[in-house]
Image (cartoon, rainbow, N blue to C red; front, side):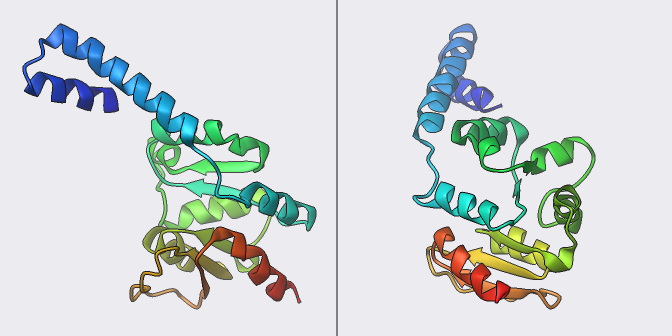
Length: 180
C-alpha cells in the first residue's frame, strides 16, 4: 500500500504512469530494506525477555497496525524467537475483530497464555491503546513506557494499577516488587 503512495507522489510531479509504477515499487522496496535492516530491539530487551521467561512469566506481544507493516517488522526483529504468542491488530481487524484498546484483544492474549486478566500486567508505550485498553479488559496492572515523560492523560482505568517507566528495561524491577 505504501508503494501506491510513492507512485502517486511521482505522478504528481508528472512522471509517466508506467515509470511511476515501477519507480514507486522500487522506492518501497528500498525503503523496506533500509527500515527493516535498521530495526533493533531497545538495548537489553532480549535479555529482559529471557530473564522473565526463566522466572516463569508467560508473555504475548500485542501490536497494533497494518498486518503488511507489522509482520515484516516482527520478522526482522525475530520476535517469534523471543515470544511464544504474537497478536497483530491488523490481523484481528481483517478477521472482523478489533485491535487495542478494545478489551477483546487483551482477553485473547490471556487465553493464549492461559492466565486470567487479574494475573496480567500489560507493558506498552501508548497510553490510549495500551493502558486504557488494559484497564478496560480488567487487567491487574499496566506499565506505561514513557521515555518522553509526557503527562498521563485523564482516563478511566477501572482500577488498573499503573506504573510509569522511562525504559522498558525497568519492567523487571516492578514485576519483582509485585512477586514479593
